[in-house]
Image (cartoon, rainbow, N blue to C red; front, top):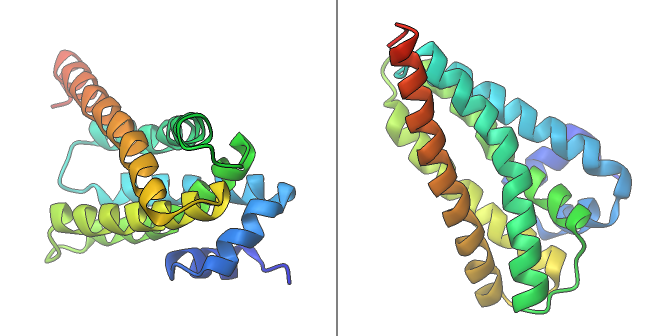
Length: 177
């Protein structure tokens, strides 16, 4: 039963296995997955009220770039190291939908809610969703999915730290910090 975008986002955020199986096999859902990531990136930028505008724009851009990198690394680790059975497109779709909780980063604009706490909770939620996405796409154990996601996420996190440093440096150079 094909679901619409909103239903798929809800299902992914609620960690519904059937939703991940559906988007894994629906080759037309790659655009939807990209839209989920884009919406999360926009929410991330808007909700980053505790950082500068320049850093927020970089953060939003990194969410989009990080999606492709995360899918690529999980594909390589999961298929080569752990002998999973997915292709890159299946991981791109499932990991795109795993980022559905990122839309909650918009809550960072609420004055009495701490942005750092929101980002931490949503980040953990996305990691858990990522484990389910990878497990379903690669058709292997939760343990292998955790290892695969951990390695992929570590690479993206290191890249994000680097990009945050670059953004801060450019913001200072341009007098925006």
